[in-house]
Image (cartoon, rainbow, N blue to C red):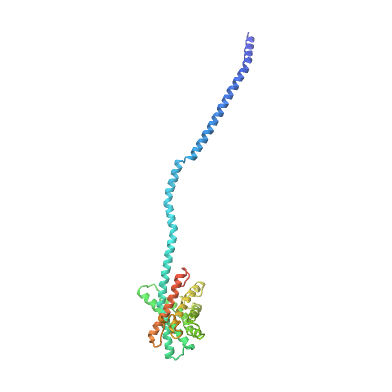
Length: 326
C-alpha cells in the first residue's frame, strides 16, 4: 500500500509537471517585465530631474554668487582706484616738474644770465676806454670773457648767499661757491668767443638771422666745451664739481643750448649791423650815445631775455628727466 501510494503520488506529480513549468514561465516573464518597467520609469525620472535642475538655478548657488558679488564690489572699486592712482600721480608729477623747471629757470636768469650780459658789457667799456683794446683784438676778447665769468660767478654766489640768509638755511655755501666757479669758467669760454665769432660772421656779410643763428651755435658750443673741460680739470680738487659722466654730459648739453640762445639775443644789442633786419633792435638795441650804465643794463636784459626764451621753450617741449633743471 505504501509502495502503491508513493507510485500514485509520483505519477500525479509527473502529470502536473508540464502545467507547473508553464506557470513558472508565466510568473518569471511577469517579474522580468515589471523589473524592466521599473528601470525604465527610474531612468525617465532621472532624466526629468536632471533637465529640471539644469533649467532651474540652484538657489543656494545663486545666493552664494550674489554674496560673492556683493563682497567683491568694494574690492573692485578699490582696484579701480589703485589703477587710476598712478595716472593722477603722473599728472601731478608732470605739473610739479614744469613748475620746478620754471622756478629754476627764473633763479638762473636772475643770478647768472643778467649778470653775464651786464659783466660782458662792463668789461668791454673798461677794455676799450681804460686799456685801449680795439674790439677786434685778442686782449679785448679775453677781457670781455673775464668780465662775463666774474659776474656769473659772483652773481651765483651772491644770489644763493642771500637766499641762505633770508629763508633757506640748508644751502651749502661751499657747494654754491664751487658751482659758481664751474659756471664762471664755462662763461669765460663763451664770453671770450662772442666778439671774434660775431666779427667773423658779420665780416662774411651774412644776414642778421644768420649771424644770430651762428652765434647761438658757436657760443653754445664754447660754453659746453668750457663745462666739460672745467669738470675734467677741477673735479679732482673740488668735491662739489662732479667729474664728467654720461648723465652730466646730457645736462651740460641742454644747458649749453639755452646759453647759446642768450648769446644770440646779445647780437641784437648791435644796432649798427643791418638794423632793418634786426628784429631785436627795438627791445635790446644799444644806440650811439646810450649812457654806459644804461647800456650795461640793456646788455644784461638781452642775455636774460634770450635765455628765458630758449629755456622756456625747452621746458615745455622736452619730457621730464631730460633737461639740466629737472
